[in-house]
Image 1: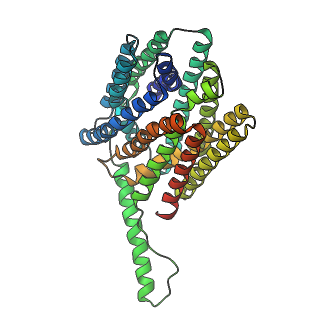
Image 2 (image 1 turned 90 degrees about the horizontal axis):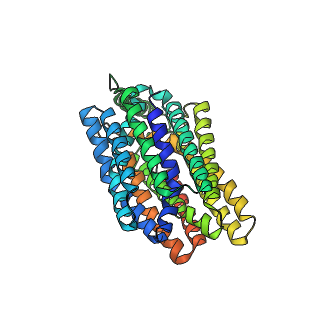
Image 3 (image 1 turned 180 degrees about the vertical axis):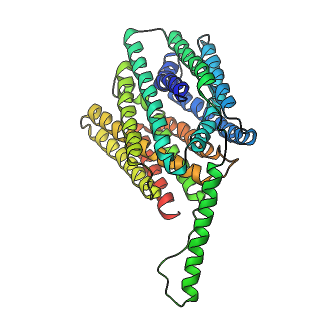
Length: 395
């Protein structure tokens, strides 16, 4: 039940994920301004993510930062209802990003410390699937409000109330772990495993046997590069997507929300698959496959749009499959990162993801506005393949 607050939070930001780009355009903002705002917010969240991850591990208090995040978001979203200037809105959104990421690292630690390593994939999957349902409901609410023509300030007020509900429920349901040792224990086990394998290889050499195996210590560098590139490609594709759907495909706001709901449904399916399968011994291999799948889907979408082959249908189906691939990737990448990142550096995962997302959220709208959406989609696909190369050949 401790996940309930995060469920309310995801409802709000599922709605806002489509609402804010469309709202800025109606306020007189441009696609490039959306990119600048999103990029600046994500770049500002990078040091914030590292800080929140460090401070929560240093103080061993995680609940406090979750509460701070939800309370701050509720306040910022209320102030949004009073803003009529697009530039003031952009500034508030950028500042809000610092507090938005405050709950991410503590949430990751809570799951890692409450469950043993062999249950991490399942635990993260259950959490992500549950909160993704909240995101899906938020998208449905956005579609419903768009169809009814509800005023934007009321939509923002609803999102503020949802984050207030997240704050109140978390007061009673979230608890700090009593003992904090699981991540440290995993690190010790990996060190011992590496040592045992090294001794095994050394004994074979001393006995005069030939070697058909090697000892390689897992390095986080390649995984970190892949995380950043994957996030960059994802942000490049999705940041200008609501405007593409509403302007280039001429879909109404309500239909745009429905298309995003299909993507969210695919993501839930991906989370569910990982939860049912349990821990994967070759998680890097599985990550490589879904990264390759995601890049291939982007290229196929660009090709179908260029040929004008059922663009609405192909876009909807592609978004479902993209969501599924992301669900599998996110759980495996998160579990692998929590296994490899040392205590005190918990925020590094969000830093790397944020760095890629910040770059992509500017590059995507810029390329789309200056060179067209097809060029932007193709470049996004290239970055997905670079992420595949990083984790395939350098790890």
